[in-house]
Amino acid sequence: MSMEQVRLPRVVICGRPNVGKSTLFNRLVRRRLALVADIPGVTRDRREAEGELFGRPAMIIDTAGLEEAAPDTIPGRMRASTGAAVEDADIVLFVFDARAGLLPEDKYFSTYLRRTGKPVVVVANKAEGRGGGAAANEAYALGLGEPIAISAEHNEGIADLIREILERLPAEPAPAEDGEPVGERPLHLAIVGRPNAGKSTLMNRLLGQERMITGPEPGLTRDAIGVDFVDSDNREYRFVDTAGLRKRAKVEDGLEKLSTSSSIEALKMAEIVILAIDAVEGIHEQDLHIARLIEREGRACIIAYTKWDLVTDREKSKLGLSDRLQTSLSQMKGIPTLTLSAETGEGMSKLLPMVRAAHDIWNKRIGTSALNRWFEHALEKYPPPLIEGRRLKLRYITQVKARPPSFALFGTRAEQTPDTYIRYMVNSMRDAFDMPGTPIRIMLRGTKNPYADEA
View (tube, rainbow, N blue to C red):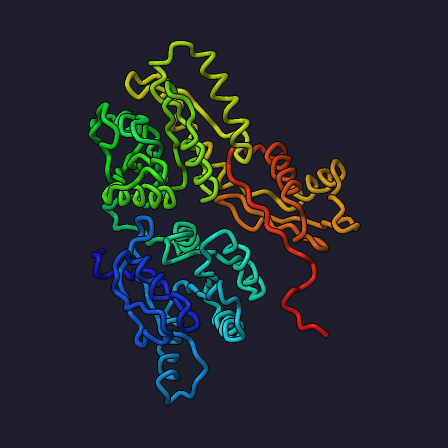
């Protein structure tokens, strides 16, 4: 079958005017094709362009803002054009502005989309910063499933959105008889760390070739370099070597700022991140800062202590590294670590099996019955605290997604649960379901509907 005969899956972006649809379109096609401005109604005709979503080609369609209007008006004709695009879609991205919150128009058009029967992903755009995820949660009220919080402008959450799209798209068509069978998507793996931590040497050892320039000088790698790799078990990987990440205050050169941005973007697009730490120098504050960034982005992490062949007192070094991790990265309790030497090959055989194990945990799903048996036991062991003289009534918990494992906790005034109690629940869940190191998200859902009209 020729490429011209293959119908690409159609991903249609729709929503009210000025919610960031065109910015998201540009982000997904990786080109500035759509005109973007901070005024509503810039896009009138739908625009199509081919993009690649983690290696899978797709047709991305930007549409005019949805507005209620008479059919013979310009907004009415724009809505008809958008409706035609939705009818032909394989999946619809329904975008709303998380900063503005859900408006009546959002709820109206979500009802329309639900009636089409098309797969719909709710996208909470402009959700940058710590409060973005909380603002996105109100979109549960639309009844279209879990919203994905992103910032198209700042490239936050885009990797999670792409993964959700790929999970919801129809299966790829079978290749021609003389073609290779379609396998799983490559596992995306980023190698990050401070300058001169041995990242490029580690990448070369994994690939079995001198693919990256290496040397004793820090800062040799300037761009995020991606290389495809197939292991001995025929598993596919996409390795990305990155430029070293220094403290922000020390990054002054314009080229280094670009390199830093490229490294952080590679981290956001990865599924698994290997944090390379120079075992001779030990753990610096910047290493911990990078680890916390990985956790905030919701990526599975493995810490690789590099240059292990140069460490003289190995037992003392192991003890010191372990103590520092336990005291400084409690939110990543049980994070997998290994010592290796990319120069000699020592410890390298353990790395990819560890990557696959971390990937399995990151993708883990827990049955609701098992989850609530654990939940009841956790509540009995340490009951929720008193808030303003009244005890919180936490009623049940359910998993809303994986990658990373994310859960919704329901109860009366659940949103008032203190961070200390959430940390207790996260650590208890780690131990009960064997999820060391991976980020775990617990979202709080009060039983009172905050969108119901007050009497």
